[in-house]
Image 1 (cartoon, rainbow, N blue to C red):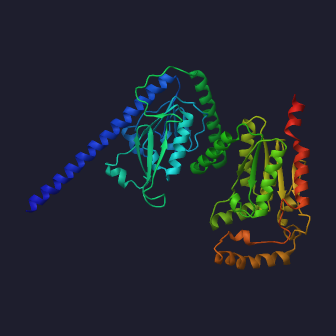
Image 2 (cartoon, rainbow, N blue to C red):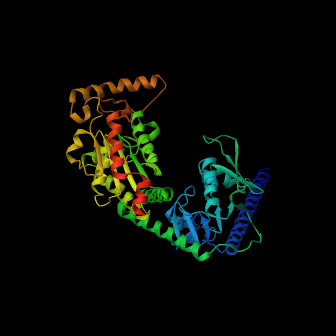
Image 3 (cartoon, rainbow, N blue to C red):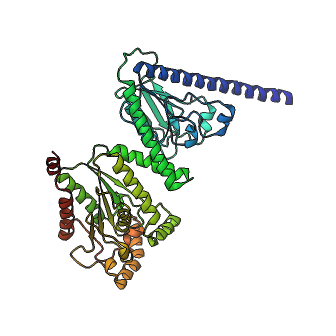
Length: 474
């Protein structure tokens, strides 16, 4: 009986093993077939091939065994530096923000990638980007019959295809339960265009030149990240990815508006106090009235948690020496590579001090301006105000206790903050503790006549209208 059970168990193991081997070999055949089809497609289109996901992955075993998962393509993109190490045209970027122009590639090939994205929305963004930069998209994915596909922890989605439509399904958890999502590829490109005959179009030399320019830009961004962050590859990659993303989004804009939040500098605009949001909205509206186009971004100088807060306190004591250096490098890179781009920094309280510290590093960039409101009194001695800086120290209605060093009034505001914070939470409207510190006079609403007039005059005098500027240039 024991031998029978043993043989039964052995037979089951061999059967399951054989079944999984067949599934695995099927996945490999499918992947190789699609890579070859993508390569053939690019040759017919006379354009380069983009591979998403480095062939070596992030494990050393593949390199040791000399077994790449698939071909290199002409350009290879991955978020992990190790996966594209040694590739002559490797790009570090996220598949949801690909730093290439529309239709730069004949085809894009992505193998066993989409299922690793956290949500179906991320997968849709990735497919939209692939369809934007390539004329055809080839996707390989794990089979539902694969046990590995079920047990790998970071497989967040099921991916499959019917016709020219890719389907996604969130694998439980917080991503959306059993709801199926899909994204059609028909309108922006085609998936699995295997064997289709197409006439040659486009200029390969021009496309490759464009690709080389983007790669050179990416290489420069990576070199700058290495100068700023040294051997910290994670921070460096995050910096260069953000830089290239802003570069792509700012193309064709007259202004880049950078909002530096007050407090610890990590509050998203929609969660800032209403008056701080009103300043950003007012400047946007003024630029629009003057005829300019603009891109608004935020610069978060601090992460979350008490360690990050302690680091920011140390940075404030040094007038943001290292953090201002990072942002100044970012602004300098963007203004150097985007023709005629102007930049406006907006900051309140500690954000105003941070903006001033950045401006002090950009004295030679005449196209950068700063609007600073309610700078903290401890940082006023280190402030430098130039003709390109608007420093507003009063809202015109009452003295700013934070600016006037009114210790008693500030102490009352800080002591009342915990009670205000508890009140908001009991009302079901929890907000950050720093937003509960309401110091009298430390409020610079766009609706206040003196605040609004000063900002509008500053922008009008320094910028004029776009039509006047174009008339002067002609």
